[in-house]
Length: 228
Ligand SMILES: *Cc1c(COP(=O)(O)O)cnc(C)c1O
Image (cartoon, rainbow, N blue to C red):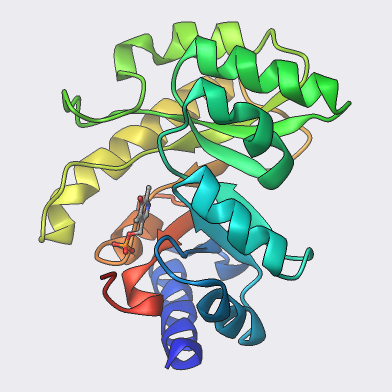
């Protein structure tokens, strides 16, 4: 089932890319494995999936320690500063950096390991009160400050638009994130050592996100089924 789901999603990614004249190889699929056990992640790995996303540090740690070290993990949840030390060791990329205090803490621990950590800036494009992410009007200030931190590498932007069951209603938010990314690219805020990452789109709306420029889609339910 997981293999068939992954195949179907990869096909949908390719179709969405073709619709807008993009190269499907420019779009990464992040399998969101929160609340799935290590054996389930292993099944997906055996179907060729090598990139996974987790929302909770402790839950991720137990899986990561049990599984093939060749798997890459992104952190996509709300990260507390007291979890950054371990997060830096576990994750290849932190997608949800939205405040300077958090960035400084990640930078300090990355420096301690003599590493450079890849990050995305999470932007709250829907300006939702309860949601994480820097507000669009504060994003430039934040990214300039984080840009001074020597052991972080800003790879791009990430967003979670307001919840809706109509994917078309997410489109303006995806478009808004792309617009911010283009503006910041022009100002040289992202690393030029690696391609820009635009992380947007989940199970319900990843084709729309790709049409609007996503280079990384975060898909859980459509791969693993409903979380209990
Ligand atoms: C859970 C989660 C996803 C995956 O959501 P699905 O609807 O199950 O595909 C993607 N991104 C983030 C940040 C999540 O927390």
